Amino acid sequence: MSEVKFSKEHEWITLEGDVATIGITKHATEMLGDIVFAELPEKGSNVEKDGTAGVVESTKAASDVYTPVSGEIVDTNQAIVDDPSKINEDPEGSAWFFKLKMKDQSEMDGLMNKDEYDKFAKESAS
Amino acid sequence: MEIKKTSLNKLHQSNNAKFVEFAGYEMPIQYSKGIIEEHKFTRSHSGIFDVSHMGQLFIYGDESLTEELEKIFPLDLKNLKQNCSKYSFLMNEDAGIYDDLIITKIEEGYLIILNAACKDKDFEILSNLLGSKFKMNLDNNRSLIAIQGPKSVEILNSIINGVDQLNFMTGNWFDSENQKLFVTRSGYTGEDGFEISISNDKAEKFVENLIEKGAQLIGLGARDTLRLEAGLCLYGHELDINKTPVEANLRWAISKSRLSNGDFIGSKKIMNQMKDGANQIRVGIKPEGRLIAREKTKIFDDTDTQIGEITSGTFGPSVNGPIAMGYVDKEFSKIDTKILLEVRGKKHPANVCSLPFYKKNYVKGVN
Image (tube, rainbow over all chains, first blue to last red; front, side, top):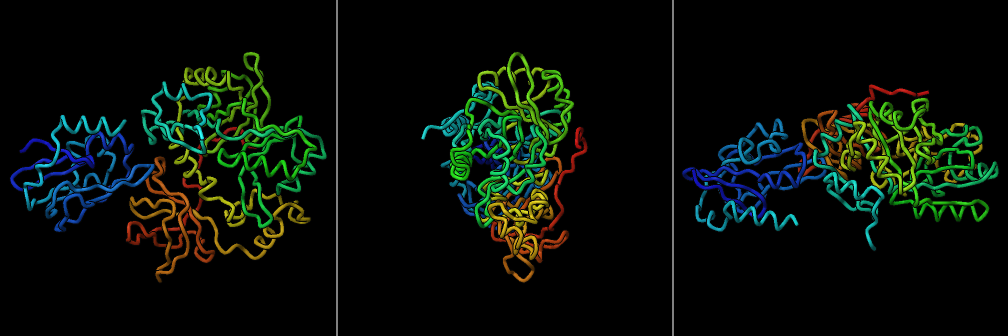
């Protein structure tokens, strides 16, 4: 599995072969607060880089989830739909959002590594 | 305009509050444990709410003040006993609501608790209506602290002995450590609890004392989920100048005896609506599944005709599901009516339901 990469919209992504797993970062969940609703893209649908690919809602507000890369959705995590509090518990592990088959792996190039993201998140929070 | 701070601002900071601007004040939306934990703690133990941004309007006067206020509020104030409180509204001639409020008869006159966003305008309206005959004081030197939840009576009584003797919707002056506190048994969470009016310089220490006894600070986020579960209106959402008390399904708050003579502001409209019914009415709404329908979500019937709009919607932590309130055309206001909510371009099924969503299981002191 590849190194974890991060987007400016606070998603994380890992790559295994040509299948990417995508979720939202711990920093994102801390900003959102208690997550009480999650909506995921449909299996078989195509999503475009930086386009919306789901919704999360906290007690306070709804937020779009974006995909950092393009591709066809091959799997979604029903467990976080059934119990959205799992997203707060383990955002960068078991609470992944969806898996997609990438069309163009060069889309990974512009994403941040962990150190870069941590710095970005710290700056954008202040 | 500079953002205002309450006397508890430093205490909020030291308790890791996340702040938002609310009605010109820097207020805590939540603390480190988060809205759901804070909500549940209030329902099971005791939550402390800083509501010092709300207006505390003292109006001093004798029976002639009661007469003047009866021209304004749809209440039987002549028969209201001293230290008893009523929920009411300040209205215009069309019964549109300027503000909803709690009015308490005190020895020297009345104490009215007003919403933060409305209090300055309310003061102006009431000053114009009452003239200069009565002394009015929108008291900025006092803080207002609410303590809510089943353990609140025990905790507060250990600091202010005697508050456990108060009945629901009554209040009194108490002495505690050489200061005068006005305490009412009331609140806005659906739980048993109290609101304490205390001078600003004593507020922080008082709250620290409550925390020492086991109560915890709760932010505006949980205050909103708590009041929504309790089916209570929030001004600016369920209530505004284009809504009447009858439309808001608050006719219980209008004294029956005042409807026969109808000599308060807005009475004509209210009497007509009481007779003929209002075209739209506030209802409780439960979306099916986990979908949350927020404020301004459009409501449809099964023929694609819009029949109303959501005014508040969130996830109810104690109900463990989504809840909402909104206005629908009267023919759709019956409990169990199927309606559709348009969220992100799709229509989702929901049901009109009875209020409150959460029924209090512990209320001591109700008359």
